[in-house]
Amino acid sequence: MITIIISTLNCENLIEKTLISIQKQNIENLQVIIKDGLSKDKTLEIIKNFKTRSGYKINLISKKDSGIYDAWNQALKYVENNWIMFLGAGDEIIKDSLEKYLKYLNKELDVVYSKIFVVKESFKKEINQKQPNLKRYMNIPHPSVLHNISFLNDVGEFDKKLKIAGDYELLLRKKLNYKFCDFFSIKMLHGGISNSSIDVFNEVLRIQNKYFQNRKIQNYVNYIVSLTKFLIKKHLNVN
Image 1 (cartoon, rainbow, N blue to C red):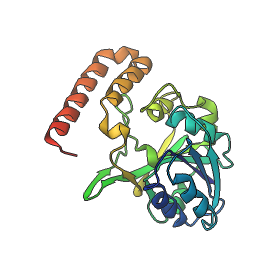
Image 2 (cartoon, rainbow, N blue to C red):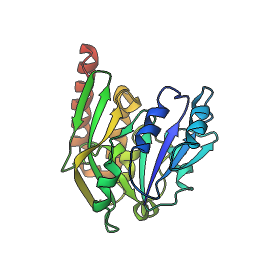
Image 3 (tube, rainbow, N blue to C red):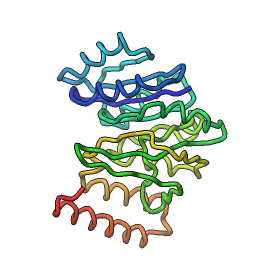
Image 4 (spheres, rainbow, N blue to C red):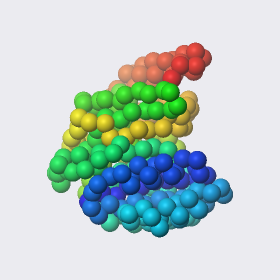
């Protein structure tokens, strides 16, 4: 029913808690695909040890890739189920969340998603978007998204030329038939590249100008406002 794809690279301090959180789910036919980019630390050792006691199927692919979206594309070739979730190392699935999703999975839907927590040490923030407005920004919390395999077959692979906002760009390729689920499913680790880099704003602007050409002025206004807020928070050291 559900496949989880995780991209890893030198994340020995993060990957095990993600795998343990998956182990706490209570669904049948769960598949986990880990695409590792040739880690040099103990990441692969941890994954291999966990495979022997996981209780669910783990496919491990260790080969070079050009970034997260290339890694996800490689992993998609091994998918056996109809619904796919993409996680980062350090993200955690809240206990029994996958079981809660099952009643919402309809073959007519493109994506199903829910609420998440963004966490780091004592910091905790709720992301709750019942009505996404993708023309303004990516406000569907991607770690919570279950993608219908038919949707992915329709829109094609992730654009591996993108480095940060490829998940956003993918969702813009067609008018989404989506379902919001009113529960928290994920604790997403704060501090990834999309949380900390100015480059994300530049990449999002290029994507919006591609898909919303009649809104270019508004795209630039959103860009300036979002970037200004980011820089102020960074200057004040506020999450």
